[in-house]
Structures are given as structure tokens and as C-alpha cells.
Image (cartoon, chains in turn cyan, blue):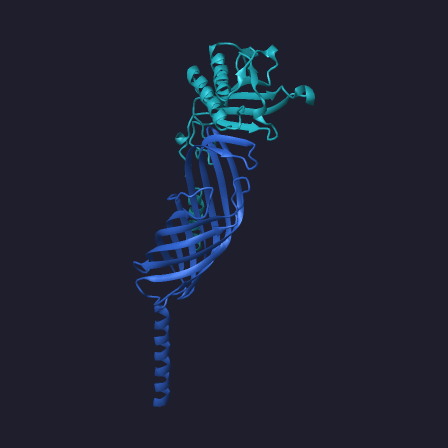
Length: 207
Length: 208
């Protein structure tokens, strides 16, 4: 009777750790798109903007601090297309633009490493062989890596900077997520994310 | 002398009869119940999809033919996928667009008392009862390759209606419906309590 109680409690405990994990394949591989705005800023008071042709490399990939290749230009053009569609005019840096925009990217690769048996674990033997438990390991080492990318777009209020004696960031669009090995797909993720960033910010328009 | 013998016979007979009677009423039984549990969330803005991934283990002790006391534990994994959409922050200053998988795992542990209606030896024994205890729960949000996870405890109340159908002296089947209410709170996910209906179907084993 006591044994049965104990056994059923044990079974209960074991079964209760049965937890269904979701199927993560359902999740899209598009970037997560976030936008933040300065609620006191009035976007309709601005008319012109400037964005550099280069994208800042904020970390993780290569030695260059700025990127100037065709992919960088694609991202910059996406921003320009969106800003133009909202009624703003692109001017050169010397023409006193009202708004300054800056793109930056981060790429981080994370590698996870599983040690093999020669790293000191007795994976070959049945855990119960010696009478007590040894951790079981693959008899070979293995690793996997994944990369995440972040695209950051900042918008600065240059028009009011002399009055305020500071350059205020009034909007940003931060897009992030896992990236694959195809560069063109990754760039496309960035383009789609910037488009979505503008789409969820209908307040960015000139009057 | 005859009178004494007669009285003895009477006493003996009564005693034997009384013994026979106590031998047939086996109401001090211990019952173990295992069941598959379907959870249907109610009034829950966070997640409203029914879960079929759940179960329950329960122990009941009959203290008389109509009443049992016991304890039980359920587990349920609720999950729901929401396709890509934009969420605004409360102050309107931030927005995020993504698809998400939302997930709630509940583990209510309750002590309960149940009342069985009708004839204790009937083919179908309906019952009503209530359990109170605690509930452990985890709430998770998954998006892209990220996860936000919370776990918390709450005070749990679980009223229940059901019926046991004995197949023989030791095994029976049962079905039940319960309402599981628990005070688990999660401000970030806007959860002030966790409520769901639980529908169970399973087997009951009874031993003396």
C-alpha cells in the first residue's frame, strides 16, 4: 500500500515534467522590427534630410568601420525611398538638412561547442557500469553556430540643434534576428525591416 | 440451560452476521486516478487556444461511502502561434512587429474533498468536489530566436464535477470537468490570473 502510494507519486512527478515544447519552425525568419519615437517631436515641421551613402559597421564583421559596398547602398536607398515617399527632400550635408539619418549594422556569430569524450568525460561506458552515474556524452566533439544581425537606423533633429545646443535623436528603428549564410537574403531582411519600420511609423511625414 | 444455549446461539449468530456485513462494505479504499486532461483557457487575453497536452494524477481516500479526501496534480502545456503583427507600447512611443509563439505551462497541486451521489455500489457514481492548493506556472513568449520567460506561483481553487464507472472491484473509468482558477500574476504579459476549464478522462485504480 505504501509502495503503491510512493510509486504513484513518483509517476506523477515524472509525468508532470512532461511538457510539450512548441514547434519553433513556425516562427518566421524575418527580422523583429522595433521603432521608438520621441513623443514631443513634431515630424511635420521638418522638410529636408541627409543620409550618408555608407553604413556604419558597429561590430562583429570584418575590420572596416564603415561599409560602402553595393549592399550598403541598397540599405541606404531603402531609407531614402521611404523618406521621399513621406514628403521629405534629400539634400547634401552642407545644405543644412533638418534631419540627419544614420544606418548601422551589427553582426554577431555565436558558436556552441560540445566537448567529446577525450575532453575528460567517460561517455563510452554505460552510466550504470560503475555503480554510479556518469554523464553521457557523444564520443566526438561537435559544434554549431548561429549568427544574428542587427540593423539600426537613427534619425536626428538637426534643425533645432543650435537652439537646444544638442542633437536630439527623435526616432530610431532597430531590427534584429537570426541571419543565414546567404548575403543577399540577409540584405533583403534588412530592406524588408526598414520598410516595415516606416510602415509602423505613420507619424513620419512632412505636411 | 436451553435459554443459555439459545442466547449464545443468538449472540454467535449476530456476531457472525455482523462480521459478514463489515466484510462486504469496503468503503475504506484508496483510489489512484490517472487521466488525460484537456485545458480550455477562459477570459485570457494572453492566450486562448485549447491544449490537449495535459494530464492529471490524483489520490483519493474514501473516508465513508460518500466522501473522499485526497490530493492531485495536473499539468498542461498551452501554446498559441500568432502571425506577424505590430504591437504598440502602452505610452505609444514604441512599436514592435514580429510573429510570436505564446506558451503557458500550468501545474496546479490541490488537496480536495469530494462527495459521491447515489448508491455506493451503483454502476455510475457521480461526484462533486472542490480542491484548493497552489499552482506553479510558466509563461513564455518566443519570437525569432529569442525567448522571454517568467515563472510564478499562485493560489489555486478547483471545483469539479465528475463520474466514476467501476469495471470491477479494482479498476474503473472516470470523466470529469473542473474549473481551474489560480492567482498567478504577470504584469509584463498583462496576466492578472490564470483560468481554464479542465476536462479529464482516465482510469481509477482502487486498493483496500
